[in-house]
Image (cartoon, rainbow, N blue to C red; front, side):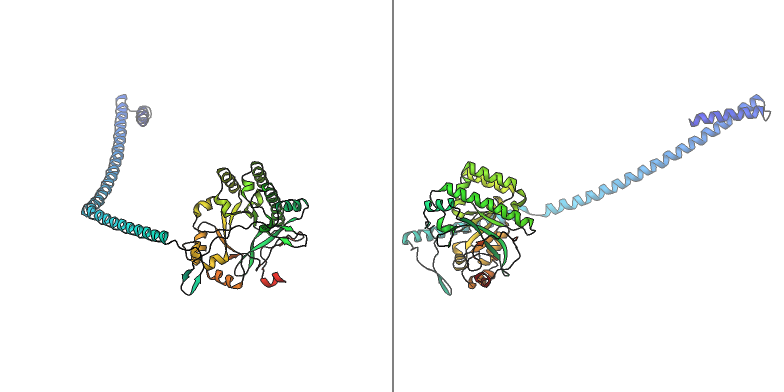
Length: 409
């Protein structure tokens, strides 16, 4: 296009010279050719300068790339020299020697433990022999066997039919201010003399599973009603609801319970099912599947009456466990029978898995002081606050403080 403009300009200049300047035809053609040549030469000169500039920039870029490659090569050479100067063979020999020594030590420890176990087996230690610690003598604790209920099954069945079964709340307190952290929803039976019987006095140990399922279903419905009322009042609470294998192992009962939980997902964060340790460890495959479904819906579990803390906490936490309950007397008097940790480290260890430790059956102020010293802050017991009726007129207040004096008053 540029060359076309040059040719048109030359032709125009020749025509102008012939018609306007009275040039002869030969002179006009010569003027046009000269102008065209000058235009072509100027255009070629401009294109050559542009090409030379582009070539110079390319050469500069290539020079910079070569300089960068040279630097990278120098760094790589330094690293290769550093690797060549090391002696991995000597380091491996040192590691192998350490592993050999460690294996020898482990073998010696295993042999010593085996000898101790053989001696204990041959001497036959007495179960009631006291374990001595510096400064005091601690009796070796043995798990107390579950005592049989004093109220016969038929009497209980009749009492339930007469609607003499009620649900009371017993607080779980947080030290040192003794503020309510949660509540146990506890079934209690009204006796003929007006006193209340606790679950240990009437809940069946063998048989009567239909009655147990009925009581636990009523407890769940009562817990849902209390949790909804508390949530509506602006003070949500955490409720521990009793649950056993009688419900978990029965297909229709488990389906009804899961249906209730599905219909009340908004309050499931405040529901914790209290399962006895003996029943938790004896769960069948079907019962564990129900446990997993409950956990996926958002509810949690509390392990009651724990006789040992030597458990797989990661697995329990994955199953939805939120709390472990241990008798305060056993935890204070003989912690070595429950765990290998120091008492002051137990709570921190469980907190790694978001599992709380609850000391139950508090009997006196000395136990509270010792638990505080060990950073065990969740407690429960009749000494602090016994079970009491659910107040229908007021919402539950999770921030109130309970003292033994108020409880007795």
